[in-house]
Length: 461
Ligand code: SF4
Ligand code: SF4
Image 1: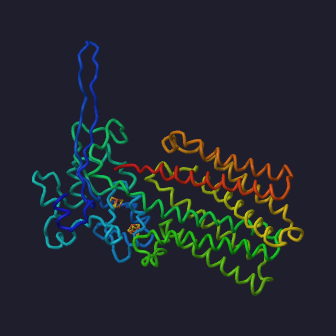
Image 2 (image 1 turned 30 degrees about the vertical axis):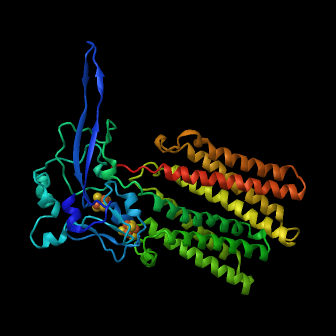
Image 3 (image 1 turned 135 degrees about the vertical axis):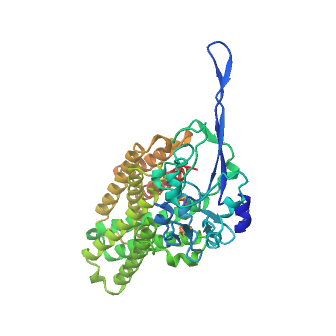
């Protein structure tokens, strides 16, 4: 570990190689009244395994992460925009963020030493020859052991190019008999924080997909001024989401590379589709201004499809095979539900504000019909989110008293909304009820986002 840090001049806290202590056991009361113990403890020295199916390469949007012809997986710092998505995905915690440069870093197998005919620094420094390196096939023949013991992740996830000799006390794969005794030395406690904020920004952007979608579906019910404002608001939300996402990158300037890995990275596809969608919205705003007749149902339909593509890519970004807490149908349903719920809400608020400010929405454009369609979207979103909660693996559910807070808040929001419509109360009270319902729905959504990110639990180290 020290040899690696020294050779590569790593920042404090950045550890390309880590030694994990896995420990467990307890005192046992025996039938004869005596006590015995089954305490165990063993160490695993781990770094990047230069996997042959490297998920880091697969998900990296900029192609900064790559695998060369010798099987060495490394980062091209010039292309890394510091999004930290590879850090989320790698089950060995191999990519490590360098706060100073705002870029990811990782073991490159001491490529320069290998070229000079020497061993990697960690291998050369190990006093007990616990670490060896060589051609994969030769090591496989001498097979010193598979990586199939706790707390390592299932090797089938990434096909690591490494072998371990299991300790005689080692526990089987996926065993929960022990725990990592030295998390301060092996885990980056803040690893999710920037990603949290980053993705929150992009999720905000994604929610507006349906903010834009609703007016498209309802275009027959909306006059031009209403439609123009709905599209304008959707565009502003998408741009705000993009700006929030960009501001949390380690190197926003390098986000120009972000759409380079459309072949395999859902993050790349998401960024690409969001930009296309934003461009399309901007064109529609311009058309509404200079050639309103061109805003026909087909143009609106293409806009809706572009929005749907963003939503689909966004959902897939979270469904990483190394994050079982997110990799299930419930995540897709939740995203769709949130989009419908917030989309219907934003569209209704835009209509309400326009109505309060101008005469728009009274007679001309079928306000009731539009409002009813938006309400159906909100209800459908709420129901989908409730269904999604039942699809989560048990470990992914939020714990404690906050578990019920999101459905309660959003249920209250929907109830207030229904009262507002069904009670036929006076306009001022109706507006108050609507804004109160909006407050409940948005608060529930924020709570849900926090719970969602808190449930992040990657397999492995
Ligand atoms: S260990 Fe992680 S960073 Fe290294 S190649 Fe495998 S997936 Fe990529
Ligand atoms: S661009 Fe993102 S995913 Fe790619 S290496 Fe850099 S931090 Fe990792």
